[in-house]
Length: 295
Image (cartoon, rainbow, N blue to C red; front, side, top):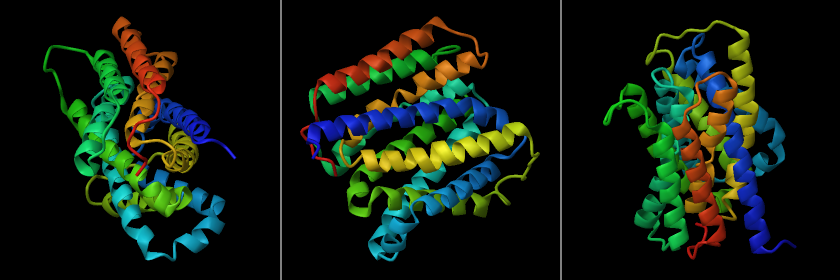
């Protein structure tokens, strides 16, 4: 039987893998949005992911979905996911893929604050310090243009960060109670229903079936949604929301690397910021487990 420390390390390694997958999809999504409208893309992405998850976890879901207590966690986490992805995907229309990823990672400092306020947890100094170092890295990586130069893309992406911070907190609270497969599946289903139910009147639906669209849908649905969301729900049973947020702050580092490979211009500030983000993760890891228990 694995020790709690070994389980936590395995969980946090899995979260790093999820962060890599999410970071790698920014360039794919940005390219796909030239041929498909935002909400329709999200609706198709989450619908396909729901089908994949339903087939993979049909045995677990057959029992758990009959319980009333799973509905509220699914609704709350799913709504947070939907709003987060709407704001993030809309923001991608007016900002760089790499900058979108960096701003989304501001959730890293929102999670410990929300955790302390909502659940009155007490965090180790290493958790707070690591979060702020990672936040500084995010700020350095996303710093472009004049002081105070935040446009529509940046503003929408910051709203997405708040939604994702709340989702991390909720998953940490509900994952052990509901089960990772069930919680991930319900999140995906709620997001799919919300996106498909609004894409026809909140936007002018557009779809050209191009290689970019099909590729982005397949990758984001199977890997970045069905796979990564299940990994997150499982991993958060063994670590805290604050530590989860700091680890997921590596997402913009991976997004930056992929964006550079895709042809975006390399900036020295991005490299400095990436080092700070990784330093923040290292500080949290060396600081050991938080005193507060996993919700």
